[in-house]
Length: 166
Image (cartoon, rainbow, N blue to C red; front, top):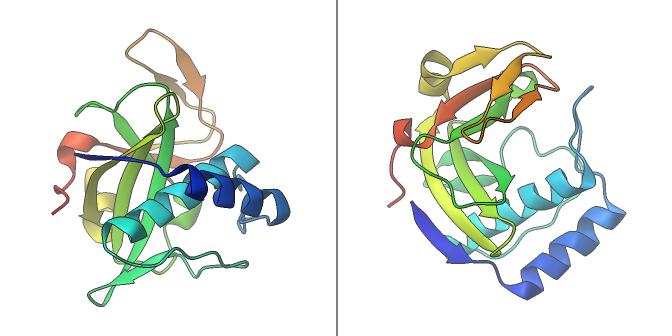
């Protein structure tokens, strides 16, 4: 995993953007303002890592966020209060399964330290075969003994099962 500090200016720009734009375009589970903010941070930090300019566009993105080397990449970002570990899960909402992208690229933001972790990537076709599927309202268990109920059908894959970022 690669860890990068998140610039304060990007945090400010992303927060202001999601205050004035709804990035959710699914029929259900469109993400809270904070979730959309974290997603926009993740997407733009991946752009920054690859030397691309930040991007802020309103409306449906077609299922992917970035095109790199001819591949359509959907960046997925989770917010955490700790640094991610190899066995930590990454989520992909099943409602997006049929959308157009080649690669799922997973990131995690440690909200306490304002650090993003580029966790890894996987071909979407491989992800669907390798990830574990959970129905909406399934109970999920965390390392610390807490649980949560899934708010949408989703797939999970751990960091250790992703391709390394290069």
